[in-house]
Length: 428
Image (cartoon, rainbow, N blue to C red; front, side, top):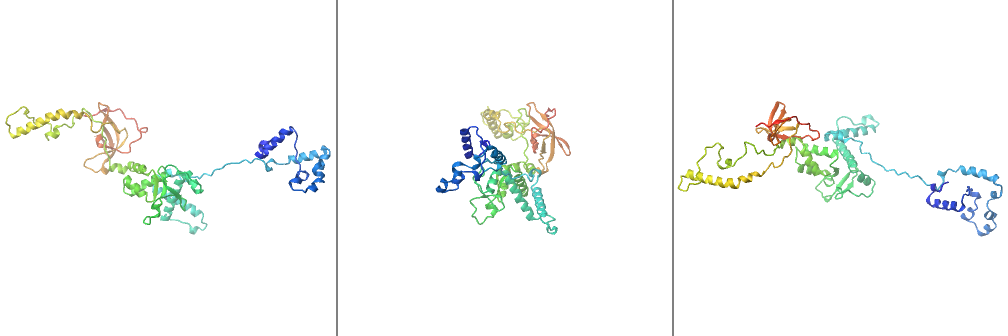
């Protein structure tokens, strides 16, 4: 056979024999006719000297080839190469991969529904294994079933989020942790869940879940639904309180950013802390704030007074106070008015309202949770190209409000925003 099908040790020697003997044909000799077996199996020297088989070879070689060659060739052809001990074996490398997509987390928008669905799945699996129908569980879900479902779903999320680390830990192999886990002393508990072992493991005043929280990834759907559920359960707690409460049982990687995102995208929190728009200042605004509001404390239509700055004689008290006020006005107008050129706020054009945006209409005499909900149907642009007024369609009709009275609510993506219709000049 071709030497490349043999193992390395035999292949090298077969190749060398073929090179030395040229095109000679090699045939198989059975063990009983193999003279080399005499010394390989052990034979005394006295017996070897008088042994003609050793010196002359097997008897069939002294006979005509026509008598033994056909039978030898037939026996050689019956040899199956795969049964030979020196044939190379085809090694197939197989890796085991844990199927973590058995549960579709993305189908659920509520953590409670996710947990209950998992509990019903586990109940179905357990009931199919019980032959006696009377012992099967029925009726409402119990607390133990809900807790078991949450543990099982958390384990599936770990297998999906940390596949390499989980596979090595389950097989007791050394794990080279990633950047997010290298600071944590992680281990597998009796339920095959990755937990965090820390410096408070010897504390006696904390529970086991507090000392060894379950590791989670903030990018997984299970973790996101958990944060949303806890945020509502804590009566819309801020990010710091939300994260601190979750860390009593869980350890989410990147939990700070997730907590902020959950609070920032909560519709109820947006309505409670609604902020109006602040378009860039218009230099032609007729209702601009002037220094007179602070100096005279009266409307701008107050009656004027004669110029007393040049008077040097004795003046009545009212005129003396008016002279002091006019003198202060001259100095103030020269030194301070020029500073009004710079904007102290609304310096840049920030987030703008786009057509079809969902907004809250600010009402000064109502709390934020009772502000009307509406959708922008038209925008009005000023001479400087900045929109400051919009028409909003509410449940009671279309109203027109300035941007300072509109609070954005879940602004649509730019790619999804519908193009605004032709706008008319901003009304004055």
